[in-house]
Length: 336
Image (cartoon, rainbow, N blue to C red; front, top):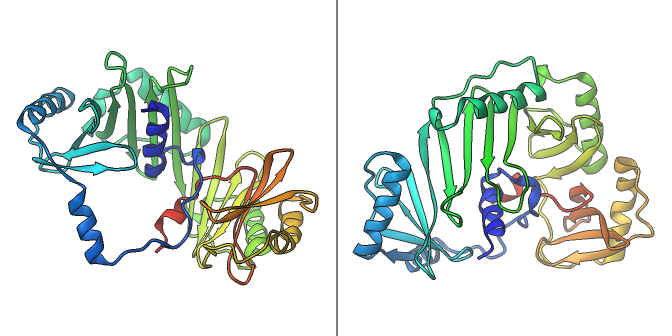
């Protein structure tokens, strides 16, 4: 199993490394009836034998620092090949690799004291570096997740929260030369935002999806050197670089993305070209267009490099536009 790929897969789902993966196609092309879902859930259940249960119980006790009662039935994650077992109170969980029965991950709530004072100060430094005017006080409990490919030096992720903010700390990240990685998300009300930002966002939304934006949620995400604004109003979401103001993407969740290739590459280019020119100052006429059957969208490519990604509805209206490579848009996961 590739440790880095598996970790990225789980973190993307949780939203912690949103920029590392593409979106899930809007809609539920493979939607099932409730009865089918129940049958599928039953087929994923895994009975835990006594010997393995004792090993899991011991590992979770060591992680939590106290006795934790686990359920006697696990659930198979077929994509990753893990079997998850939750504690009876659902506050802890442990995963092992189905193929070799090795413990892969343990997660649960712990005291913030689990994080050193030095690391807490580094997280505060990032938060204040992103926005100095807010006050940041950590909640007393944090979510901790450990991965045990290297038991002597496990990759550990800490998720912290407080009033109007959340943050994460990663230690011993596989495939990285960094000893630690820190990121954060800070919430703002509309009246805390600069008029220039609101104007830029409104113009971008009007250009891309022809709607008037009334911001109801604003989040500053990233770290000191690389941060972006994520603004939401109604069913519209967009991202803008916090330093340059450049638009990263616009997404209209009120439009239904086509899930089959009913639109030709030529038609897609004709629909997107004037919007890309105005929104990104990008001429896409000479770009190659490719339909992505997995993401159900179009990539606009130059010299093998993706310059733009677009999803359209049946009337060739924009569902989302992304500047550059395909990025993760959380709202695409939450659509029915």
